[in-house]
Length: 269
Figure 1 (spheres, rainbow, N blue to C red):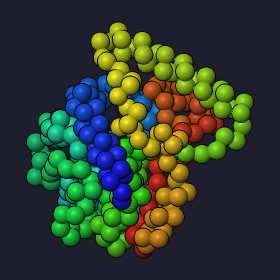
Figure 2 (tube, one colour):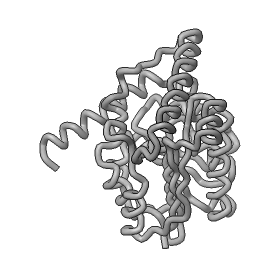
Figure 3 (tube, one colour):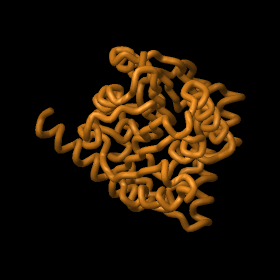
Figure 4 (spheres, rainbow, N blue to C red):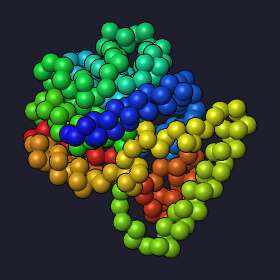
């Protein structure tokens, strides 16, 4: 890595620290695309798949959540019986997650403040599953991170990549135009709601923090190649359209059939 690359990588990390410090406890309020009814069903289905393929086993199954944030994947998996370890770059989000962990589950939950590159160098601990949500697009070199953490998955264990921006070619200009029209309406309503609730948008703050979005997102086909090269079997690739509100997501997915987000589930073979 050149000095310029290292400088850019450090800048991306610092911008993510700054942005998430500003979001803090407002993170979930500012991201209804992760909590609306339509997306909630996708999340529930993903958790069910993990549980079916990797039964919790009386808290003996260890799961590592990279970029755990406020607990999007961490909390539902914890509730299903796994022993959870979460790491996040943001001290504010990690502290908020600590307050959301029910007392009866705290003996199976640990949360640490660390960046994923640093944490990868800590010890040789392996996990029954490594999961992450909306993390890779924040990273300078997401390929290297995926490769490193494949090595932390036990034989037969799972790797879940969830809620990442989908990079793909435009197949139909007309459908893409309608897709963008729904997106504009969705964002306009979102902007009005945030204004009414007094929640700042921080629109200019994400350019560097959401680094991979500058390149159109992440190509899941390339991720599949990386995972296979690291001894992973691809179990499922799910593509869909995430929107701020469930009605917009329903229109995009069921009526237009457009996509902007993907989930990828793999198993160590």
